[in-house]
Image 1 (cartoon, rainbow, N blue to C red):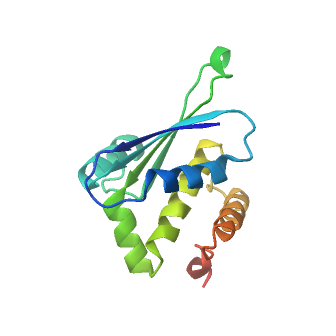
Image 2: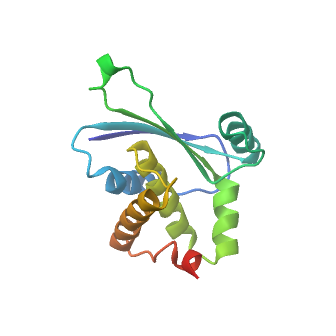
Image 3: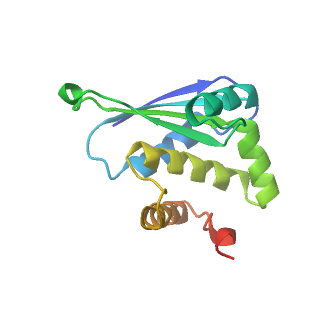
Length: 152
């Protein structure tokens, strides 16, 4: 079971609660245990501040993933962590990249959830594994490969 805390800290248009739940459940279905996560939807000032504080980059990014840092004695709790998604960045990227807005949202939520599960894309092998899983999950939703333009 998924417990999703959706925090809307922005008035900008964003997907519905049901869409966020669907994308999270899809990304987390490989996990047999219950899952608990928070998605916070923000504007650029908050996104920039968080990216600067945690990644030392002075701009708002599309999605930030904060995996839960759970002590060993509490590892059986379902807390996965938090995602912070900057609505204006997602909207702008979809437009600039010629992607359907819903497909871009789905991709970024799935991407963030996979980070919470421990997937990463720091080295090429890890990136290939993570991107392959993203492609598979997005195809199930009927969305195109989000990396197609990155390969040319």
